[in-house]
Image (cartoon, rainbow, N blue to C red; front, side):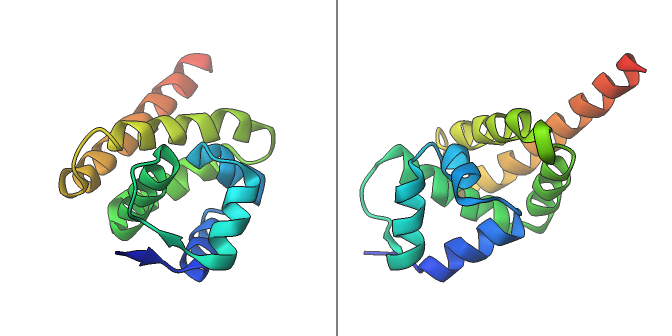
Length: 127
């Protein structure tokens, strides 16, 4: 039975500069669930989508390349843009949940890079 400590979840939320509601939206769980996880930690046994999304986020955050790309992508959506940024990153996590964690980190790097490139190309077209 693996447990993710609450302080690790808090640290990741702080690193992403997300409030509890944004983190809940990102992981597709309630704000109360995030609070409970941060207070008590989380047992990763079980197959809930929220737990899987959290595990996928942890996998991405453990990869330097994927973490840097994720942080760069989120930084582009600060303020009002978070309404776009959170669902975008959430869709990446949904994609990661379809594959194994070993491949998930690699695919996460590729997907985040692809999304970054799409955003850059779209900005150029909009100029």
